[in-house]
Each structure stands twice: as structure tokens, then as C-alpha cells.
Image (tube, rainbow, N blue to C red; front, side, top):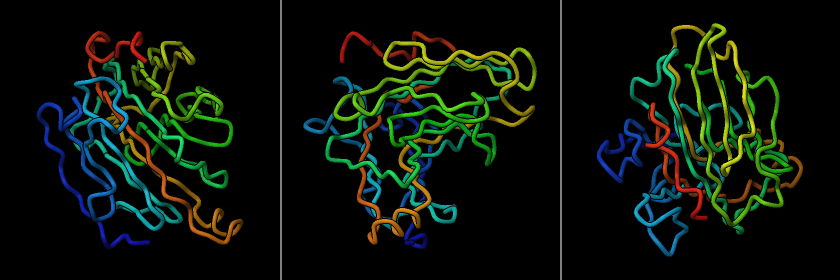
Length: 240
């Protein structure tokens, strides 16, 4: 992999360039293609909402690069979310019709992390988009494959991370609540941080089956926000 050809650059924390969620670094391969802000005629969620185009090519990987993985992500680098703080996190994503599925790979589009431990992830697998992770205790289909491509999907996470009984996790997708859990859902003391983009593994399984490297994949993200007030992060679902 081209792990040596990597750039880490702190995204600006002001306004549109930061997608309303400051404190992200680019964990991507070198070059302009992995992550860029775009306008129409690219897909945009709503006029005025900044939209980020993430492109992952074969061999790309941002640091630190796990084994057998290709990755282009924006990773939260600030203090993160302290356990015990009730808050809403929102993001919208769009998979173009020309972006091919990779059945041998688990493609992670967003993940909430405590250190190196994933507590909640949104993954693209055969069948559609799934929510998964120890905070859920199961894999939950949230967007079926037949409804996945060529449209925006709005994800809202209502969360209170806790090692105790006051923990709370609810997940809304396109205005419908698909998950609701209470009780312990995170370790005590460690902040929770967001990463989003494209991360796929195990690359060797795809190559062994097909004899080729994985195809280039593109996903768009918009309206990435976090706030204690749901009204500050929830997108207008009437506009699709």
C-alpha cells in the first residue's frame, strides 16, 4: 500500500470548510482526490450545506494504516465527546450509482471510537447499510441494498455514552427510528470520537477471489454535526 504517500492536515474549524464539526484531520493518501469539498453538479444534500467527496483508490491508506486495509477518512482530532454528555450526532451520505459494491470487503462509512475500540459503526455490506458494534450488541440493517444508491441517507444518533445503566443510544435513519437501547454502552472515562469516509478490509480476500485489486469507490458526506440540541443538527427531512 502507499502508506508512505500520506498527508495529515487539520481541517479548518470555521464555517463551511469544517462541515459544522471542527477538529477533523485528513487520514488519506497524498493528492487531491481522497477528500475534497464540492458543489453542484456533484450531489449536494441541500444548497448551502457543505459536501465532502471521499474517493478511495486501490492501495490508498491514511495513517496509521491497519493491516490488509485501504482507507480514506476524516478523523476527529479534538477532545471528543466525554462519556455522560447527552448529545446528537448527524451526518448524511450518498453513494453514487457508479460506485461498485465489494462483496468480499467490509466497507466502513462512519464509526464512533473510544481510543482504538469501535463502539458503533455504519458499514456497507452485501444486503445494504448496517449499524453494528458493541454498543448495539447486534448487526442491524438500516438501509436495504435496493434503496441504497443514488440518494441521500440522513443518519441521526441520539447518544449518552456510559458504563452504567444511564447509557442511551437511539439511531434514526431517513426520519425513522431503527435502534433504541438503554444501559451500559461504553467504557468509563474515555472520550468518543467520530471518523467518516471509506475504510475497507480485508483487501486480500477480494484480490484472492477476483485476481484484481478493489475498484475505486466514491461516497459523498454532508451536514456532519454534533450538538446537545437536536434542532441544531437535524436536517430538514421534507427535502429529499
